[in-house]
Length: 93
Image 1 (cartoon, rainbow, N blue to C red):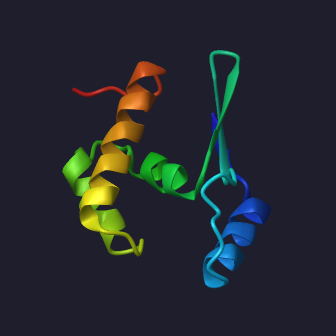
Image 2 (tube, helix red, strand yellow):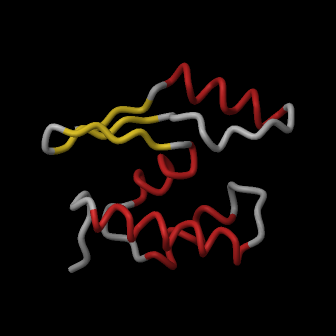
């Protein structure tokens, strides 16, 4: 089960506009096996794309919406997907 926190997302979007560092603000929560995992805005967007897309497809989609160098985005997405796999929240077929 998961949910996106609209108030937090709005706060992050406002922070983006003002040039603030909002990486540590959670915008969604995943509940799994009795544990709660908070995701920041990038993690939330990656999570929403974990529906059969490859890591490369996720990176391509996100590169249009985030103002970050592609190499940095690739590193962050791959690391995050690995974390999700280790937690048992996603898997590869």
